Amino acid sequence: MTLAEKILAAHCGKKKISPGELINVKVDLVLSNDITAPIAIKEFRRIGVKKVFDPKKVVMVPDHFVPNKDIASAEQAKMMKEFALQQKLVYFEVGEMGIEHVLLPEKGLVLPGDVVIGADSHTCTYGALGAFATGMGSTDIATAMATGEIWMKVPPTIKFVYSGKLRKWVSGKDLILYTIGDIGVDGATYACMEFTGDAISRLSMDSRFTMANMAIEAGAKAGIFSVDQNTLDYVKSRAKRPYKVYESDKNSQYSKVIEYDVSKIEPQVAFPHKPSNTRPISKVGKVEIDQVVIGSCTNGRLEDLQIAARVLRGRKVNKRVRCIIIPGSREVYLQALRKGLVKLFIEAGAVVSTPTCGPCLGGYMGVLAAGERCVSTTNRNFVGRMGSPQSEVYLANPAIAAASAVLGRIAGPEEVGR
Amino acid sequence: MKLRGKVHNYGDDVNTDVIIPARYLNVYDPAELAQHAMEDLDPDFLKKVKPGDIIVAGANFGCGSSREHAPLAIKAAGISCVVAKSFARIFYRNAIDIGLPILECEEAVDKTRAGDTLEVDLSTGEIKNITRGLTFEAKPYPNFMLELINAGGLIEYTKRKLAANRGIKVRR
Image (cartoon, rainbow over all chains, first blue to last red; front, side, top):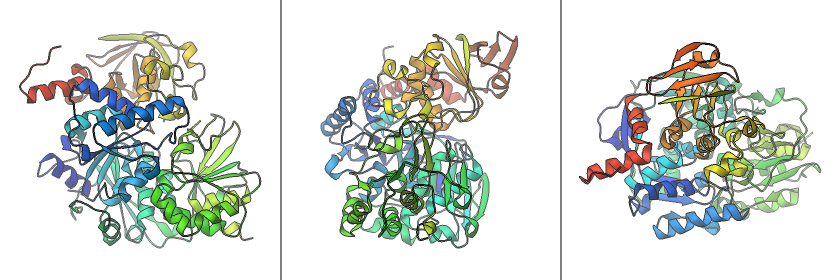
């Protein structure tokens, strides 16, 4: 069996499972946020049970529209907070919060071998830890909140093998954009993407989170990595409960095996209006921009900010550009402060915000006007994603985003020196 | 159960950001969400749509975010059913969970145009294009999906299952 199949089998009490099989899975963690929790709470109440199955395993994180952007979103955040406090759930108020998918791994709430479901499509981020994690809707989450279980169809697994040495400025973001560009936004629909290869074993945890995060942009149910020393080092100081490490068998059945030589992959830019509409940075041409966003559950971790800082150090954000930098969590924010990154960003002419999903989904803190273009380290560039349906979003890694902020057009980090 | 309505036709990869833009997700009441359904893809959608109408679309319908607001919004806007070549997985679950009928049928999508009248028989999976006099067979639901649909969605199904575990019969 594959890594994903082994985790799912262990959570449904079966020795062996195969793709296509319907199973009832016990979940280790159930997540929702200020947009999806209100419907989940309403549906939970319809089920008629008084308490969630285990308050330590139900997490609610206000992060999309908080600190509240308007009265309506304040009402939703309030409803979630009251429910979370009354049920004694795991809940983080704005002073200790972060973007859910940056926060939960940091807090040791997700560990290798877990099954996690969340009412947020980017729940698949936790696959970086060797967990099986997938996004669902609010009603599914309500059911799991009540019963601790959810039905799933065992997904087939597609194996991706990345080999070779990464070029300079190429990160996990580029590998996943390249992959989505290759297989398409429905290239892995219903499947689990297993990321393997020597290039992956040398990849940082932050880059792995970025890759697993965007598995959904290829339609996947989950993206998953094997646990190695990198993972164990990350988990060691954070875990407060036991966990189990699973490995894919040598004779695992994969629905497909796709191999890439990463030494041929340049930094990537996904043009409007699909994450699969990718081009290497050398083929971008002249695209003037109005805004840069560096942050989100995709690229709001310390490594991302450090890369942006390397490009922005001693340089100024272009006069025509709003450069918005959003640390993904309180911990990332504090580390950025201690390392002097926040000062560096502000001196360069960027604004630094408290953690929020805000601009990524056109919520607030960086909404685009008609005709405006944004280079963003986020995950989606669909029509209207960050504001006006006549605006454009270009997805890229933090180095390209920072270089573009300096030059006022989409640019690679090598170009700012000239 | 038979559904009948006029067709609104869209292409591949209709994502949840255009089905209901996130800027409207500060509410969750379906009737309010319906006011902005499909807005970024088809600004006239709300003016055109009549109760019972059917969305016909290409592959990967509902890709992107997990927002259940997407099927809720189009259902509350009056859409009785979505026929597509394929659905993104979270949207598929959400639609079944909230009771929005969805059917997969490539041929029906290829041979149907905006404004046609479709009749969909949910019990048999038969899709009739009344305007063109054509009949298609949708991909059948797996048995478990049928159980969920027949129970009236996931919440009703869960209620019954919990009651059965406790040895209680649920009043319907």
